[in-house]
Length: 194
Image (cartoon, rainbow, N blue to C red; front, side):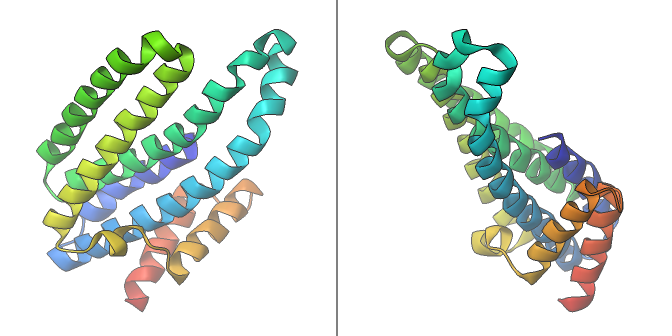
């Protein structure tokens, strides 16, 4: 999931370097779309390997932790998307939008823990994390829509450039380029095609 953090690291400077609001919005949308696609792929891959990985790495005694881990896999991917949205909003000069989202997510996490921890144990805590991260995502998307002047579908729905970003990520995994270089190259290509 640190790969999603790498995309977040290049999002803020890329968005902030743009001189026009439309260009900032396009860069933010391109980063969010690429991250959403990558997070989806990572969530599926993570869910596929998590049960086996827990047993192999920690032994049979930890088999009971698999359901909680399977809830935390998509939660980690949602968290990665949140990082990119937050950095994009900071790049647009809106750091308080990220703070507002995090505080709202904190409230949701607290309420969910109170409601779910006692009756469900560790699974309840995992669900509380997923609910908290998802709440942050929702508030960030609302704020990004407002400040970028674009729709939620423009921020999330894949386009051809999203697939090119995932292809660049695949090349990075195979060692042919760095993730930052691949992400920057994809963002530059996207600006030329839009």
